[in-house]
Length: 89
Length: 145
Image (tube, rainbow over all chains, first blue to last red; front, side, top):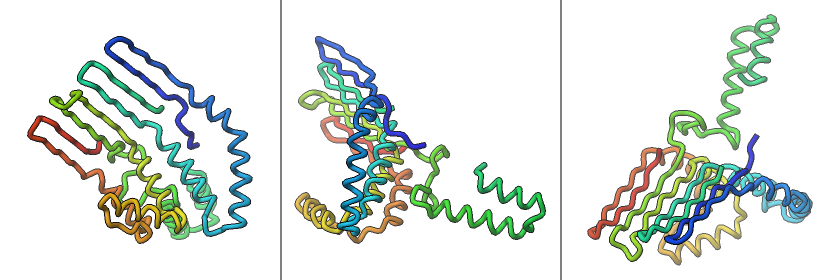
């Protein structure tokens, strides 16, 4: 089963401070679930009104892209010792 | 082993279909998978296979304003999903993308790009290596791993 990123690892380091966190993205998806249901209804209506927009395919494609974002890592390091690191798991 | 494959083999074992019929059914099953939207393109590395899994972009500028280093890792499957998504965008959106690309010096009509062509491009990204060295020590590398 394809799942969107469940956890994001964030680390921000400045010359003075360091901060790191594991963000539970799955909680965000659970909170957004009612909105997703509303979106589904809106998409169904749009699909009936404008079938050439291929709403179902667009939604499926967007969800697939979101799911495939797992494994993405961005690491930016400054010369002054500052660093920002984000990873999606 | 998938349920469909197992079912065909069971039918063969029970003698309900011949070996030739089983082979035809298994071939058809394989062709269906390759043609499915989520299936890999011919020549593309399947997820979990030995093919490249990530596109890496690294930028080093030791003598720049901040001496920054950038290291980005993007899953190849994300690129594939993005490509598929671009292929199903509504026609009106294509015009806007074309206009924005042209403003940035890229004269490309995205509506003429077919999904199968893009799949092939992504599949061959594994062979891509870009290595640029600047005269101030800055370095940009794009490669797959």
